[in-house]
Image (tube, rainbow, N blue to C red; front, top):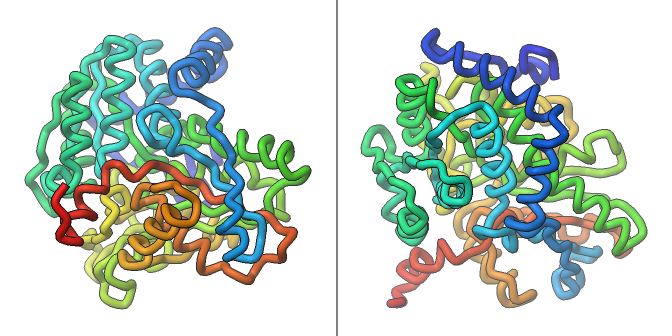
Length: 392
């Protein structure tokens, strides 16, 4: 990364003048925070004593039989709150307090980032307001209830497609008007610099732990890392600590929706092109006139037309490979993991399982695949039950 927040051609700060002072102040504050050993010790303490790190690396014997290699699952679903999101929200909330901010705002799609922000707001005594697309609220009511139970105020965003993109827009408008007292706790490794770097750094605990755990369990590092990609926070957190190891391959799995040929999907790296969205230059889904395209995924957390700039650069370099799986494949993969290993993943994480299944037979029996299970499936059960006509 260059000093101005570029990853190759991607990244940067594409913002209205009204927000430039806020992001420059955030950049300066983060540089101080990450070099302050007392602050880092406090973050480490919260991650261990409050969040429950390290999360386990679980050997999956039955999936290993199916895929023809040794499969391990990095269990972010077991983190407090039920997803990897708390790694980032703890870091950013402590940074906000370090910088003297007294209010947190955030966007959320699947609701897990909103819940994680509400958790840290309650833990640190900071008021929280969450922006969430009205369509996402309809399919993630359990997480809305959890956020409100934790004391957060949830705003339904009715504009645009009523999904994650529109929630980000609403949060940015709030931050523009309140940046002196408010920290915008962005949930993914996208947005203007320093967010992609900052979120990657907070989420890199995933990849750092899994390397040490794989060495302890198997005596060697993995051959393939697999993670789902929406905006990209769990993927870059999984991949970043191993980027310097050329022998470790990396696969990002995007939302194929109803199929990439239909145009009804969220497969940004597979099907997008360079453009500017939410303050950063990266790949995005857009029409021939450059207008941001509508997206679709059964997984609300993957229903986003952009992606983090570092992942865009890594794909252009050929350092990571990307694939897309359909809604049907993801739902099937959720049931598959539940039946084969007794673990019910989030629909987002089920995309990673589906992508891993595409790799069956491509690794030798001695090779190791690690799949990041970014979240648990509780939040998706009502929606899946409705689809099957089951009353719960």
